Length: 299
Ligand SMILES: CC(C)(COP(=O)(O)OP(=O)(O)OC[C@H]1O[C@@H](n2cnc3c(N)ncnc32)[C@H](O)[C@@H]1OP(=O)(O)O)[C@@H](O)C(=O)NCCC(=O)NCCSC(=O)C[C@H](O)C(=O)O
Ligand SMILES: [Mg+2]
Image: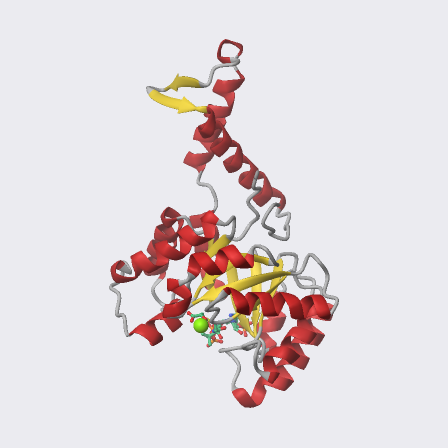
């Protein structure tokens, strides 16, 4: 499977109940917006927020990915949210607290029965102990349906487990890597959890950099000021672009034609590095044109 990486560096949560934030979100440089109808909306505001969001989406000119996080699908609010979301021109529905593949199967079946567009994907939040423990099974079952991404919910993980990780998230790392591995093994995108301290710019930068090293495709965010740091951390750096250009140029030299492995600046470079280098340049070009594509398992 050749996988073109779509831009998922910065995915901002916007509360469905906040008219000012919804209005502002249209002009932000995030790669995607998660319009939240779940935790960011008080129980009494669920219905009005859904209607507000319906109107907003109908008029929205946001050029990136649009995702709606619905309430649990087994609740009346969740079903109403899904009905609204399926006809609103969005790219994906984000399901909270996914704990088994059956939840994804039920959501995919509901979307089929609602005649939702085939390209409407499901994203799954992995944010409970059961969800983490079963991440690989969930991914394997989900990709047979509409699933295309995992989103980590570190706040709910903390709530459910009482884990109190240090600033480097040392204690969380095994669980985060388990989720990343389950996603990668099944061709899913995977997004890191939110960073809650709005005043700690350096902490955010470090957590974004760590997330990138861990293999996350991007970070979920809660405030517009977090977009630029996430875009910088998850986009290829100048150094990565320079190195990728050098690798592509080296393999294009006539004396290297047909060679599987070469030496470049004292390092062994194989054709798999050429594949990686092309990916970096593709991301550079995607960012330059800011062309947004709907992620899919086989895009
Ligand atoms: C945290 C906030 C409540 C802070 O909002 P506010 O006090 O208004 O901040 P500022 O004054 O600094 O805002 C400056 C301007 O930016 C706009 N703004 C703020 N946040 C957003 C946003 N998310 N999207 C769009 N625009 C935003 C303000 O309106 C101001 O605009 P202006 O008037 O023009 O100056 C707020 O940031 C917020 O609500 N953030 C999102 C919270 C949220 O969605 N939480 C739920 C998702 S996180 C989660 O659940 C993860 C997961 O499930 C888990 O378990 O971990
Ligand atoms: Mg959560």
